[in-house]
Image (cartoon, rainbow, N blue to C red; front, side, top):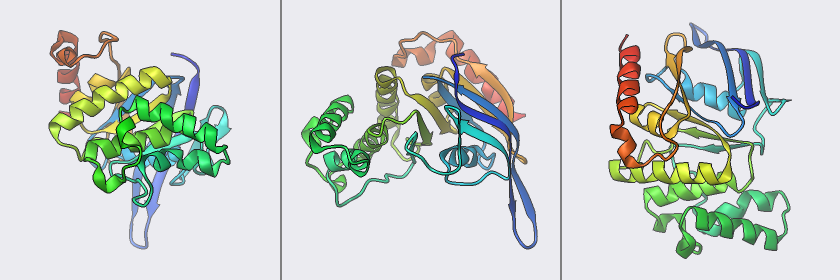
Length: 252
């Protein structure tokens, strides 16, 4: 694997209330390589989204050390772009304005912002919707804009928390193919959370399976599939064999 962009060592997360303590994550060690597409999968409540939020700087760890490109994570930062399941676009801004929002906050001049938004409008194939508002877009289109907005800041890592979970089956498949195209073009490191085994195998170079109570890593799998991930790859013997192995692991 290439050099580590995300490094997590001995991460623990414990939630404490007046009457009880809940151990969400225990002894998580993780390295995500440069330009790697890593997916974490596991049952509901295993802590996979909590882990992602801690890497994003949206939650504090109870123990352990986390860094991105050698810099300790002490809160949110422009080096990490986040895409949630919900459509977190600003409804009062157009598609172009949403994409340009981060660069504008950074003080990037308007001509450069326009170049950035033009690039990503082309990448997500929404050039003709540049002046549209989120309410005028379908769910899949909104999520495309959310991905473009996250990437417009040129983050070192793209963090994705079940981004296609709310989409219908056909749109979900189309979004998976589009995401791979974007990843291959932009060469961004991706840390992806899902509960969908097919989605995990189709997208990833490496998959980590988590178990619950407390959240911990059970096993990791290298995905040995053709680099060209066409829809037909879902019928590939290696795809089906890996799916069976992960299903059996999650069962037990």
